[in-house]
Image 1 (cartoon, rainbow, N blue to C red):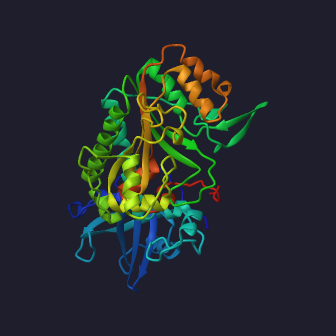
Image 2 (tube, rainbow, N blue to C red):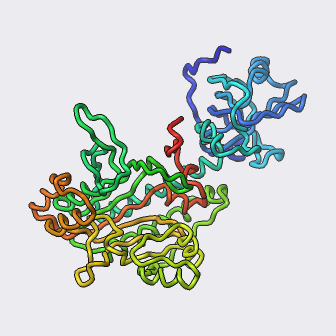
Image 3 (cartoon, rainbow, N blue to C red):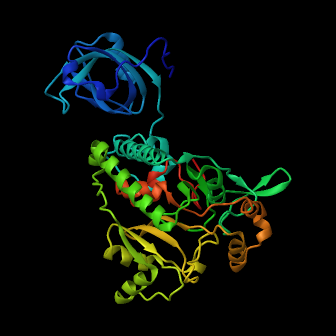
Length: 439
């Protein structure tokens, strides 16, 4: 069907701006029809925009003919513009409705739709992701992204207020930033390159000139894992700070989590109510457990992990029951951490690395960095890496790199914590993993 032209129509009001005190006011609304109820003598259209919904009421023996013609054509998910009058009523939950005097159809939807746009019928996650933009129109998803937006605003405010400079490092790199094999290779003119898995080496180098930096941006890991918490493309929140050690950046990390949780709890009450989730603001300081203490706790629970090995997921689930909110795991074995994590001076088999856990899920990882070139070269060789591949990074250590420390946390895992979601794909607009490259 032929759609109407926008012409000089412009939105005057969002659905959330209309109240019972707007009685008698003329408004111009834009949105999508989410539900149609035809009772014969009267027809109700539920219009939704990004702020919420509002009821359009068409009484058939009173409405103008041009309005009736349009409403006969409209189906769910049609994009429309409405000029009408706000009217108080006791027949709607919000206490008002809009009586249209003119309607434009700006976009049509092909039926049957892949999802129930009213949200009354649930769909499998794969079905939702295949029709992602339609799925994102649901009230719960709009609430979720409002929480994410407020969390990002809080993170930036916190770091900026403490003198950190926001930076943007390259995504196309010539060598592995963390020494792992989980890299996506790409053709870069006449040579092989990779998609960055973290900004680690760049942010370390930038402490030499900026002292305190942070970056929020996408990174890539070619991991074969297909779990509820892994992605191939994710948003990482990274900080690096000069003249500090792991204990300093741990304190910064727990403070930023406290600030972000507080901000979301206080400013997203409506969204959290929609999500049926309560954000618990952590009490500071957060509990700190050494790796060895964790192994002892697990042993008493019947989960024996040899010292030096990584902690498997089933053991983490046990740990999450023992510590059901935030806690740090510190003093990890040096050989289990990346080459840039510093060993302790008095106990080189133990590192100054830490993880921030939320229940059983790793939320952030960080530590004191190696800032002596000779030690860094030794650590590279220990992990079977060729120092020549890192020559550009190593060269910077000839310029007076300061002692420094930092951490990184995944935005998506943080949003899972803030919203109660259990699958990381639900908190990503268009998730990318081992089996999904579209839409």
